[in-house]
Image 1 (cartoon, rainbow, N blue to C red):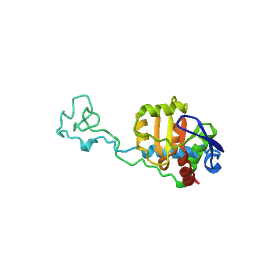
Image 2 (image 1 turned 30 degrees about the vertical axis):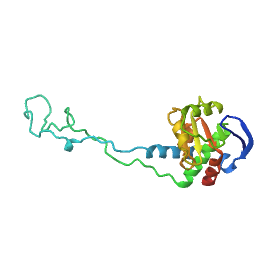
Image 3 (image 1 turned 90 degrees about the vertical axis):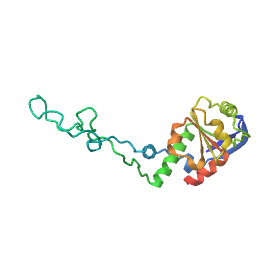
Image 4 (image 1 turned 90 degrees about the horizontal axis):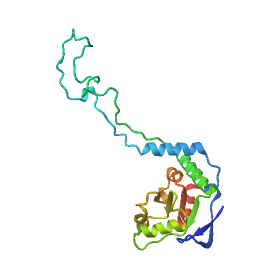
Length: 208
């Protein structure tokens, strides 16, 4: 598959790039993508939720009403979950939500997501965008030139680009990542995937 390389003005540079078929042209495997996304979202959870149970609540254990003659059930402690301020019965406890996904499954999921974007015409290749200073206005101009200012876009660079990152971090529908940090979830949640020319080689080498 060949794609034209665009510049920051959205114009064709006259050059094109050949995308590896085994990375950008496979038949997407939906189940593998599901597993990778499920594991990614699960691993983002801290699992620190906690409520106090009966033994952890500080309340008097003095019997607060007589045993018989009240017309109600017996009660010997205000720590009982039935009373306001009592401990919670079977409340959440801290635990790990991490899910393990095999390396080959992760790689196949990423290839499937990239192939899906390429086949849907939502993959754009651009020259490395350089900025002398952080300026959101200039970055918005690049988005308009590429005709993706109304889309959720993911920019992938070959290396950390501080000025570019600072220029786009305040934009709600734009996200910037390095090629080595690219994951299946970010690819899928974006409407347009913008790869720098240099990042394509890095992505191809890591997924072959």
